[in-house]
Length: 226
Image (tube, rainbow, N blue to C red; front, top):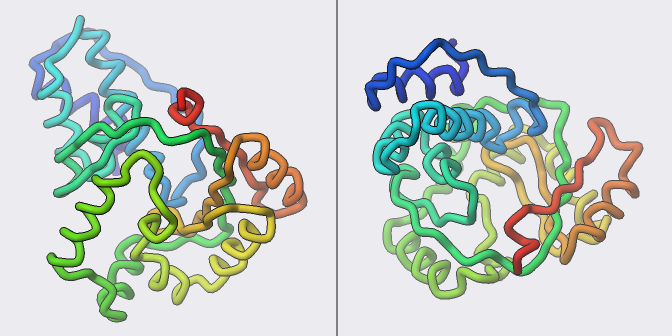
């Protein structure tokens, strides 16, 4: 099918009425493919920012509407920052930058189809009630600056683990390497470990350097500002 970044350009032209010259996009992938890390959505959001610039600017509302039409993970990435996304990803609230931290990324060799993971989640009865979701949202909003581990939860993790037990090995590797918290990304199979700072995440990546696929260490830009 159509690349999501190309779909973003086409949708922007239609919604904004921009008839500028044809453009060519070249994407250098740094996020593992099919990893549950919204890499395609990040590409689409970047394409929207570039298109808006090429068009001489665009109303922020237009960008958000186009982003929401492309997928739930796109709107929060239209403007870099830390966002609380609710609804189908279209309701956004900017959050303060968190304390400095580093991330260890452990890609998986296996591929997981998102639809399969959601079906397994339904089979296991994992979806939360509306009351539970509302209570957790209120707690996230109350302590948004530095979320405790009990709120850093991926509800799809048990389902993904059932379909791909190797995820459990990656979670244990991150914890043994010193992660304060380890969790699944999206529908998997990538696992991330959170560390107190970028140096600790880089040290963990070196420790696991023989791993296949190789680990990555990332220091989110927002965390540097404190």
